Length: 119
Image 1 (cartoon, rainbow, N blue to C red):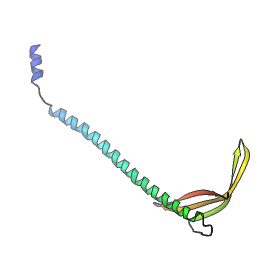
Image 2 (cartoon, rainbow, N blue to C red):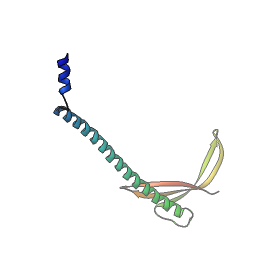
Image 3 (cartoon, one colour):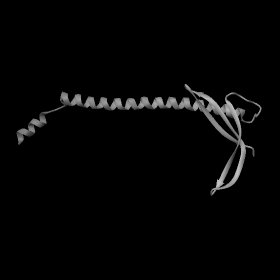
């Protein structure tokens, strides 16, 4: 029994196989984290572009909302009304107009729509 304990006490450090396996595990973990960071940064950039496009469209919409005489190819005004129901019974009707702004986004277009009441 004493000779077995002496053998284990003399062993110091790690073997080459243990070091290679631990480096492989660390490499796999680091590749996973780096790909997550790259994916996150890409999503942040795309969200920023989307927010910028929406902000520009909203600015166009708000600058032309009060001026009824201004017409643009990108802005459409449609008289409409909204009917509100309470317990499936007509409660009230709100007259107004729908305003739509069509704006470019990347390789396509998007539409921002709002309703302005006549109250």
